[in-house]
Every structure is written in C-alpha cells, then in structure tokens.
Amino acid sequence: MPSTATLNYFGLPGRGEATRVALAYAGKDFEDNRMGFPEYGACKWAGKGLPVLEMDDAEYTQSTALLRYAGKLGGLYPDDALAALKVDEIVMIAEDVMANMFKCMGQEDDTVAKEVLEGKIKTLVGMLVAKLAANPSSKFFVGNSPTIADLQVHAVIKNFEANFLTGLPTTHIADTAPTLMEMQAALLEDPKVKAYYASKA
Image 1 (cartoon, one colour):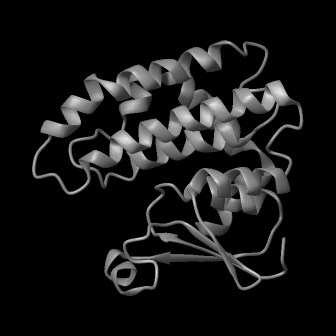
Image 2 (cartoon, one colour):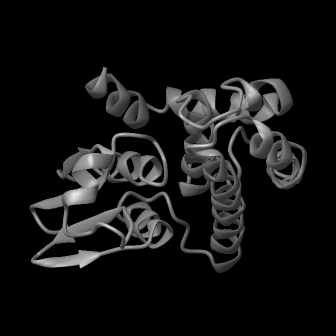
C-alpha cells in the first residue's frame, strides 16, 4: 500500500466501517476522511457513491472490493480457496443486510423498517447465525482468528447501534441474534481492533 492513502466516506459506520478497521488492523497509515451529507453533495463523488479509496493519484471504489484489499494487507483474508469462499459468502450476506437496512434511511415512519425486519433482514440474520454456528470450535466465522467476515458483521451491528435508520431498534441484533454479539465481543478484544477503537475514543 502507498505511504499515503485517503479513505473517503460518511461519518456513519455504513459501508466504510469494516474497511477502516481492516486498514488499521494492517497497520496502514491512512487519512480517514469522514464527511457529512452536505459536504458529500458538494464533492466530486456526489451521485457516484462512497467509499472511495485514493492512492497514488488513483481512485478505487466498491466497498466489498476495498474491504477485501484491506483484509489481504492485514492477514484478514484467507489464502485457502474454500476458506476465502466462506468469508466472501458471509461478507455478502452482511452486505445484503445493510442494503435492506439502508432502505429505512430518511423514512417518515417505521413502515419500511417493519417490512424489512420481518422479511429479508430476519432471513439474512438467521443465515449469519447458522454460518457462525457451523464453526463451533471458534468464536469467529471462519477459522480461529478474525477475518473480514467478522468485521463486516460487526459493521452491521454498528449500523443498528448508530441509530440513524428510521424504525430500526438499536438492540435488534442483541435481541434476535445474541451469538453474533458474542462474536463481536471477541473481535473487540483483539488487540489490534481494541487499539483502533481506543484511538477513536
């Protein structure tokens, strides 16, 4: 990774949180440019979407691609093909959860929230719980140490807790999927992850 890099995203956890943690986990120095919505509306990426990672006069987009890149830098993405498949599957299930969560942004009431919570989110969170249970020898989704799969599910939990999506309870994962909270607790005890959040306190 270049000596200088900037990750541009909103101040919310959103689709940028997992990549932020993964870059820090890898020990990479980067500028964490967190912008508000008015600032985004006036920037060169308005309408094109975030996050954007700037490196060596080039720009890279697509949150999952950025997360996978950051994960490879820090040993959070497996070399084994089957393990990588398992990680990618979980990352994309979590991405689908976020896509449904974000349908609630800016809504005037909880109508959409009720629909997605009882529909797609319920199904997808159930899939995550089952995937975690399929690795009973570990607190994490794949193998015995954190991967970007754990970071992405952590980002889902952070988005619920951030309380910016109309009608979504901040404790939804704690109330419906406590084993995912246990995974997050183990992740947050990882020295590198703990150091990252301590630096943001």
